[in-house]
Length: 393
Image 1 (cartoon, rainbow, N blue to C red):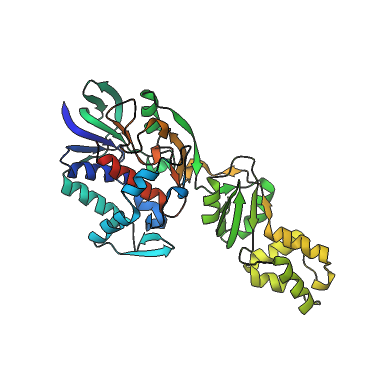
Image 2: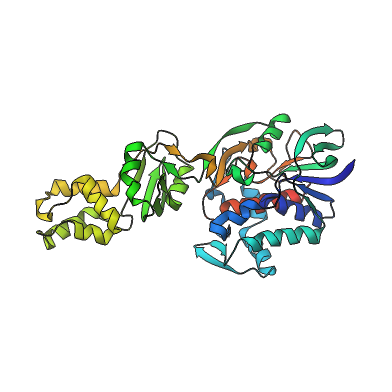
């Protein structure tokens, strides 16, 4: 029977970070994963370019039943700490949005960097290895795996959530938590596109592929980013962001002109300047042509400006500022970038990431009830939680 000081289940972002950190401390570490390759979600993230951190990351960018839980780890291992690691490995990066750091060409260098760190530190990685059972022992844990039995002093659960099952995601981490009596909060898909009610889906179908800057609001949260119309519904950064705050049955309020301070004044000025002109000309300047045509047809706005009263312009402005959309649902875990909910952080030490009532058992990354907004925050949580746990396993 083989023995390691530390076994990390999950060869993703958090697991590899934790393994390298612990191995550099002189711990004998083995990472095991049922997948045939490590870091699959790293490679596909950010459109294949990996938004590996956000320099503006703070606790305000995360959702959790315990909002204060992530503060300690984010302070002890910051976005700038990870950025320094990227710089040391000579990885080319660019800042795509404020604080959002991406690889220039491909996500591959980030994964290679983590694998190199594990190699330098002496951490072993065993792929195609599934775990059939975990048993508590007086001095640690016994794992029965497809590669044989394995014992360890510390066990780290870093196998993520339920999002993108085609990448190997499963509920294994939640099962382990429940096995050892840890509470698991309800989970659902986050950072996920919306599906639409049949009538609106059919109406928007010809507009698939159109992207529009919008401001979307729901449940006291607002995000101003692009919206993408797809053949299944609505997506893009704005919709992915708000999806984490949306609940079934909620209505989205979408401002189609987020950069226009006074929409009604713009409409009134246009009526005064060109009363005999049709509305199409203005809308074609404000929106992509196909969307502008759809808007005017949907609302019966295909008239000369002079035919609109002040009340009509006020109604038009209101519809442009608050397009009410009630989604049919979301695309679910199949395309979700993250899983909301998970292992209750009240049962976990925010300093060590060890289960309070199960010495030697650690949980890091997405499996915990800590979910970041879009823009590199989830990767930073993986680095921070993995590093901090690696100091104590």
